[in-house]
Image 1 (cartoon, rainbow, N blue to C red):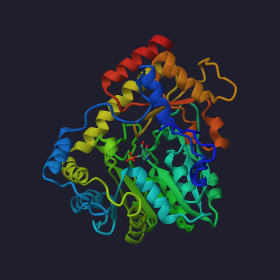
Image 2 (cartoon, rainbow, N blue to C red):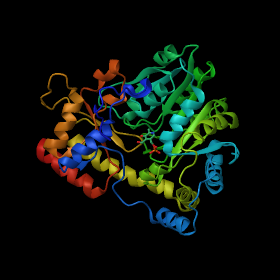
Image 3 (cartoon, protein in one colour):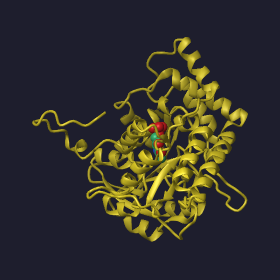
Amino acid sequence: MASTSASPSFRPAQRVSGFGTTVFAEFTALANRHNAVNLGQGFPDFPAPDFIKEAAQQAIAADLNQYARSAGQPNLVQALADLYGPLFGRELDPQTHIVVTDGATEGIFATVQALVDPGDEVILIEPFYDSYPASVIMAGGTPVYVPLRPVHEGGGAASWALGMDELAAAFTPRTRLLILNTPQNPLGKVYTAVELEQIAALVRRSNAYVLSDEVYEWMTYPDGANPVEHVRIATLPGMWERTVTLGSAGKTFSVTGWKIGWAIADAPLAWAIFSAHQWIPFTVATPLQEAVAIALQQATEDGYFAWLGEMYRGKRDRLYRVLDEIGLNPVKPDGSYFILFDTARLDVPVEAGDRRDYAVCRWFTQEVGVAAIPPSPFYSPPHQYLTDNLARFTFCKTDGALDEAARRLVATLG
Ligand SMILES: Cc1ncc(COP(=O)(O)O)c(C=O)c1O
């Protein structure tokens, strides 16, 4: 939706008055105008698996079309408890530990509403998913930013680290929440067990909780030299009672338009999230929840999750190889479906008042014909200079689209 200044007397509420449109809306529109291969926004351009589509069609035909149970359809919360119980190493109660949300995005919003009072501080690690600060601001909280920093040049995602002293210094008596994202968008970093234990130690010493956004949980790319493993911070000692873990059917089953997500937490936390959720969407689409329940059961039985990771590993390698060949120094992602790369060698004019990463991504979209996303919206203004020479591509696209993007990149930059 475009912003408008139609009525001079209209004044929006303060909680939204600082918001523009998202970077994704802007660059997807630009990609469409220029017929660019859209490696900007992270939505799969390939078909969702037949088994989940058929399950949704059957649920609609069976007239499962009225309001769902507010905290989640019984079949879905049961399927989630069955899947995640062993992963968390504890029995999950489908009735009290799980809230089904309108995508992980509502899970983030509802959790922040449930935990953050005006004036509370929320630690956000940069680069962040852009709904985190918006959710904190709408709750009247204060974001406190701590950037990941490259440890050495030319390394992979694992070489971007959180300075633990810097993180420790960000905690104050007002810290109420830390938002973590692993595997991470846009760096593709997968936090190690050691890093997560260091974060957990700081959290245990405070009055804070963790919101762990794990929507890319099945997209990790271990290899012999790099034993990447997705560790759930809720499984570390003393962290179950302090952690809300989020997941997303949109990411896992390539149905981002369905907006089915979930929050898993100890009963008092889940109750607080439910208390907010019941007044946000109240319920989430019934037949789609029924379809996700069936899909989760089937995926557990037929190895779908491992297949998904391998499928994305192939796409990561395809895009990484070409970016490396043309000298854009990509950060090799250990997880998620994004790649950050270095645009320093490109001589792109930047108009006064424009950000360099925006100018470069517009240039990629208009002149190369491949849409990219500028990463500065994933940083607070004081840290946006860190992104001047960075741009983001996604590889959740067909091999045909990735190959066409590679052809255009090589034609212009090779
Ligand atoms: C880190 C992260 N969290 C949450 C979401 C949103 O998930 P959903 O589509 O389920 O709302 C995204 C989507 O891009 C994301 O990258």
